[in-house]
Image 1 (cartoon, one colour):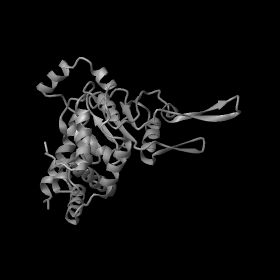
Image 2 (spheres, rainbow, N blue to C red):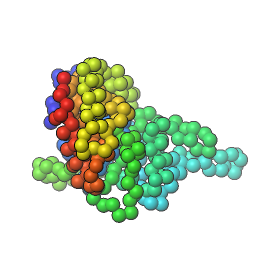
Image 3 (tube, helix red, strand yellow):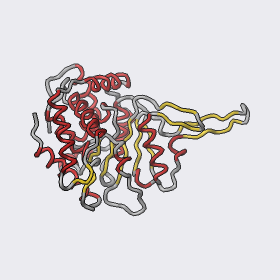
Image 4 (tube, rainbow, N blue to C red):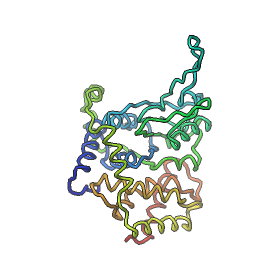
Length: 318
């Protein structure tokens, strides 16, 4: 685990946020750090892991930590785009159509098992994520700020699923795995008697305005030219790697830079170092690379992450 730098007013805010989430979501610190970095970078998160490891809890804890609204959408094969976005309903008294917003009009949205819905429904969510607005019956409705989507997929079960294509996966800034808890963490989970009560009494660590300020700071954070060259070399190396059919696109390189800026802020710095890029490389790059092999599920994830690790070993850092 990478240790944060000396405390600053900004890093204290982020520490309160991470500590607040950690009070109810028991997992590796790196998982929470990467989740918060994705949020601060104005990105969205894809969690590809087995059921029962706390994905919903992570979303609820994060929303409560920033005093934000939270909605969970269970994706199924009969879910319609209007079930997510909302629809216009005719008001007979007023003789007009009124827009009834769907669950996507929340600050934090958990899209659970996103690959169980049809491509049309997936596309409705992913376009809203990209544009931060939805258009219904010719009228555009802005989504609230901040806006953060956590989507989940089960990498083990593929029956009745519609895998996200590479172009849609690219909408997620990072893809992570939570993993099983350690023995000590598992014991702590078993000792917890009133988790729902803790969530009910959960005190926000930051305001939504604080978070928007952190997002602006991350966007303006300084990245040395040598580090920009490093990102370019990593992207170029990915396009010529033997096991990679399609390497990192220019948009993927931009995502790597955005994530590194936010991660540096999470680590308490107002500048990037090579370790920031290395820390976010696998979560940002692995789901964007198209590999030559035909592996599926956990094996595919492991191979993609190993490919990224190989790229980092082959490209000298500044």
